[in-house]
Length: 154
Image (cartoon, rainbow, N blue to C red; front, top):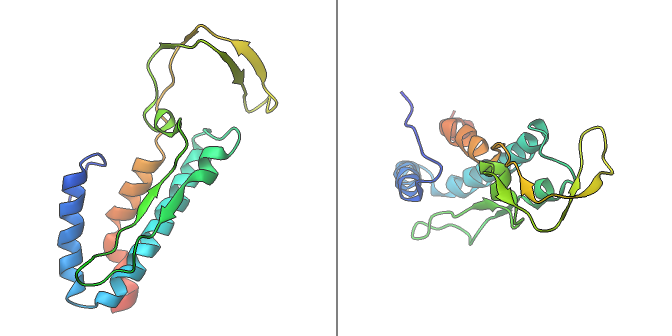
């Protein structure tokens, strides 16, 4: 049975990854950095694909802003560190949705059928449903963790 991970449980994620790192680093430390690069690249790609699939892409800014920071070259003393994320301010609102809230400025409303959009003044926004893209990408990559190592140990 696979271990369940909570995307927001940073301590649990670190504990899980350290356990895996310690198991694998004894076998082949040079492979670990390559595997984590592959995982980070796959997570980036999957997150970008999910944004397109869940119809969250209007301008492409959020999708193109998802990047991988690879961190320093890993050693036995400093395990690999990869940061996959975005600096787009509204990214969390797409991932988690929003509750109804007040808006005090004009908003450009775009749809699949009207890519140009129309400017409207909205006083109260009805909120938006969550359209997760980062958490599912993380889950998909970490759930097949062993497959990333298999190609190096078959």
